[in-house]
Amino acid sequence: MEADPDGRKAVVEGVRFDGNEQCVIVSVRPEARRRQRCGICVRPASWYDGGRGRRRWRALDHGAVRVFLEADAPRVACREHGPTVVAVPWARHGAGHTRAFDQRTAWLAAECSKSATAVLIRTSWRTVGRIVERYVADRDGAVDRLAGLRRVGIDEISYKRGHRYMTCVVDHDTGRVVWMADGHGKDVMDAFFDHLGDDRAARLTHVSADGAGWIAEALTRRAPNAIRVMDPFHVVAWATEALDTERRAAWNRARREAGDKERARALKDSRFALWKNKADLTDRQAAKLTWIAATDRRLHRAWQLKEALRTVFSLAKSRPTAALRALDRWIGWARRCRIDGFVDLQRKIRRHYEAIRAALTTGMSNGLIESTNTKTRLIIRRGFGFHSADAIIALVMLTLAGDKPILPGRQPRTR
Image 1 (cartoon, rainbow, N blue to C red):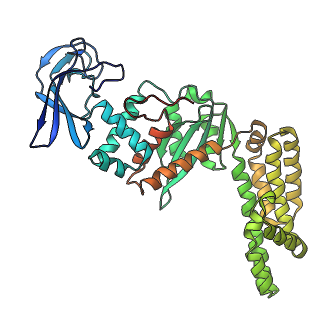
Image 2 (cartoon, rainbow, N blue to C red):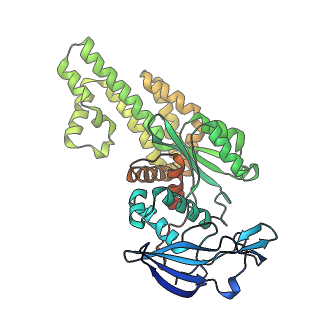
């Protein structure tokens, strides 16, 4: 017999097969000590009326046959909630499915697409969504995910064409998603800090993020004690963009001014050789880079600037103080290089100087939240898209915000 999480079982009164609906009906009742309790607060309450009579809950199938639990559903007069349907140990209040059915559905939704889950359990994908929301609410009902936050990461993720974004907040100390919402920008950040509260926002120590102005502005207003940490990946990506801008300029110079089509084609095909880390170059790409050094000193100098900035962050892993000095030298070099893209880049780095210094000294990055974004994209791809951000957020919270569901009757895996 299906039981609630505390191991309390129902009493079976009888079993019959309904030939019309082709299902098994199991008549049950709660144990005597669990009867006449409010379905919301589960406190003992006085009798009110018989409610709508007997009702059914979908249970786990028996092979290919559907199974339903059937029991009386009277109402009690709860002092706090008024007339309320009595609590039953095999299902959540207001649910049409047993706890075990919800648990298996949540596990399937976490492991495969919502459509496949709906086909397997013989229900609609909207019902799967409601079960997921119900399961997450029950799992996290006594948990405040925002409690004790000290170091968080903030980023946005595109989930639909037309610049549709969601904002995600992760806890660096637990590795879990703590908050997610549709949209991005100042209003979304204000919603997060409103939910967090001023007292807890004041206790934040570090916030990792990219260079988005709306994040920096919100942190200045709502979490002034937190140190903003610039994500190293985005800083190196800025340098890569500046390098590619110079590569395109070199290609245009060869194509238009010099009229050298062969050299222009070689510069056009040098993108990956310039982008890749020096240690990862193939022999052909290394030869291309040697050719650039001999034929276009300006472009090669731009590549050296990109590699030098990447080396600054690599050095920070073992020698953060040396990395700080290297960053200052890089800024001076870029200021004098006479390459417009890198002159602009050093100005940008100086604007985010304190946040970049924090990245070098703390070793923090947005790697955790980028991993979360990758898993979120997998959820979206696995479901072949979603009608709304709420459906995506529900599945993200199911799989990445707490303990993942396990199958009924199974023990959680130990690490």
